[in-house]
Image (cartoon, rainbow, N blue to C red; front, side, top):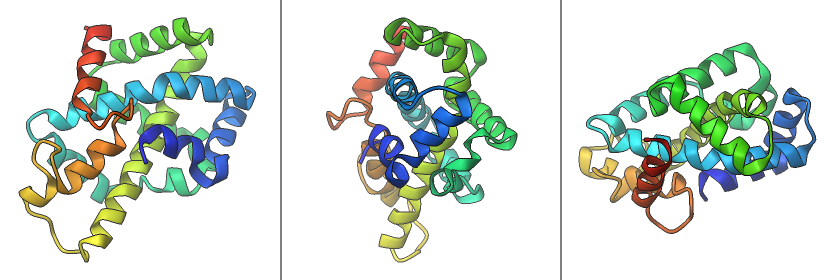
Length: 190
C-alpha cells in the first residue's frame, strides 16, 4: 500500500472525511487536494531519506513520536498540535516554506483549488503521512520480532528491509521506484 492509498482509505475514509470537515470543504474537494499534494509529500519524504543519515533520522522520529495517532484517530488532524507537528515535518522534508508554497501553488494550478486551502491541507497531510509511516514501521518491527535492526535490515538506499517497505510506501506513482518521483519533483520545484 502506498501513501495515497493509505490516506484515502484509512479507517474507511475517516481521515479524508475529517480533513474535509476541518477545512470546511466537501469530501470531493478534499480528495482532489489530497491527490495533488500527497505525491509531493511522498517525494519529499523519499528525497529526505536519500540524504546522508536521512533514513536513520526518520527511524528515530518514528520511534520517538506518537505519529500513528493521526491515522488511528483522524479527529486530531485539525488540532493545533497536529498542525504544528505537520509544519515541522514539512520543514524537514521540503527544507523551507518556499517549497511548501510552491507545492501548494502547483497543486492549485492542477486542481483548481485555492492555494490558501491547499496550504492548510499540507500540514495535515504531512502529519497523516508520518502516521502512515509509523504504522508501516510498527508493522515491520513486529514482523522482525521487535529485534533492533542493523543497517542492512534498515535497507541502506531503500533497497530492502525497512527501507524497501518505506520506499514502496512512498512510491508516489506506484511504479516500484521512489527515485523517479524524486527526479520529477526536482524538475518541478528547482
